[in-house]
Length: 101
Image (spheres, rainbow, N blue to C red):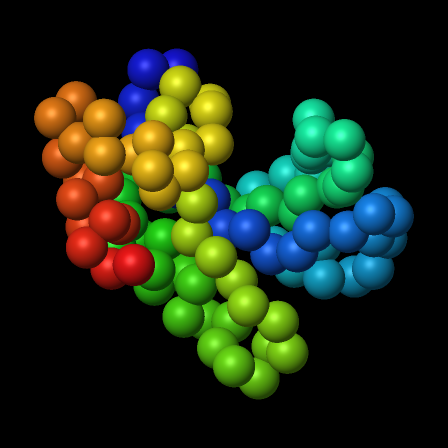
């Protein structure tokens, strides 16, 4: 997996969520964060472009009651904004993500 993808961060919680929302999501993923707090991350989608991820994010809208974030992944690794700049030559679509912040 050497490509860039985007996922939606739906929620982060210290407990496992077992509600119906996950069943409604496209490609739902639950990860245990490898930080000391050990929170669970609830991610959805696997989008090839930032525009696709933004369109999916817009479906949640403010009425969802929570903020959904678009997260870039390069080589299956979450790219934080400060790290993403180093990958813009290899993944030009990241410029869209960085310009939108």
